[in-house]
Image (tube, rainbow, N blue to C red; front, side, top):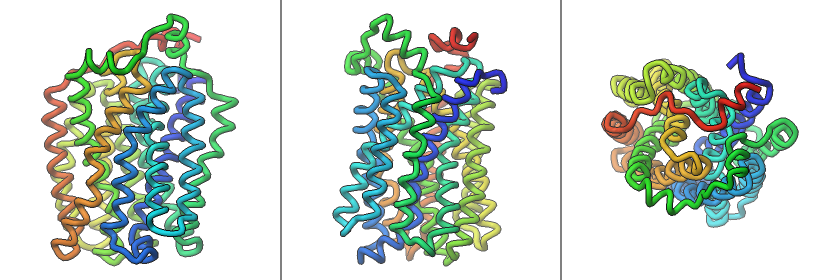
Length: 406
């Protein structure tokens, strides 16, 4: 990382920051589910439909913005994405009723859907080949970093600004635009492909590689159940089931998001030594013995330690995903296909929050039980799927080497 050029570091920061601020906007919602339920005179499970809808429409955004990024470049489409999700986060603050709120979250979800694929392709196509595992971990750490920022803002400001103020703060990502405009160049791989006039039509690529596409969608469904199943209802679990105050919820959330960032970077870097598959399997497997402490313990300290260890493992497995998907897909579909299969997996997993809240309500408000069932099941499935997958460590990405020597 210290041998990267200034341009490569700028691209790494912009990609990381884009994903961080996107996640920040998404996770604001999970901290205010119970408050929205009270304001709109409905249940937490009904409000959690907003999470489901946001996740469900993200494949549409991944397809739209990914295709635009293949045609017009990663950089301008990344900027367009940021403008759109910031705008609809702002509009969410002014929702006059629950139906309007759900509508704004749907459109926000479309805008959010494009960020991961476009930002990750820009990063992976710019940084040196030898650093992709590390960059993968750093990039994916942007997700828990966004959660961390939301935790801090919730703990410090929620009692002052309320749920509407939280969504107003969520419009701040638009401030990243000047940095991208002045400091971030276009992907060298995309520029080279434009010169060669490569055909990047999506349907022929999917038809040719349909087996790997199905594999990636199923794998990403498990991964999204893994992350959302351990994150989305956790603040509600802390607030409702354990009656913790906002300050305690914020402290626990901050600690497990720090762990998530450390886990992503650790296992992402480790994948350069032991391989992508082994790193993912190791992290997912180690989440299993943490389940009882994470979901069924009592007291803020025990729960905090369980949450710390769980997110270290969950996001540790996730830390390998950006480079693994980038290396699995054809070169002329890196902006659209990884993001598209990732968000299709999100579509399958979009029922998570509603599923877990319904399980909890059917068992006397036991959110821990619902979360443990989902997290334990998909941890095992991830190990099985990845074990049968293809190892990709060491694959060269065209254009990176040339850029590395500049």
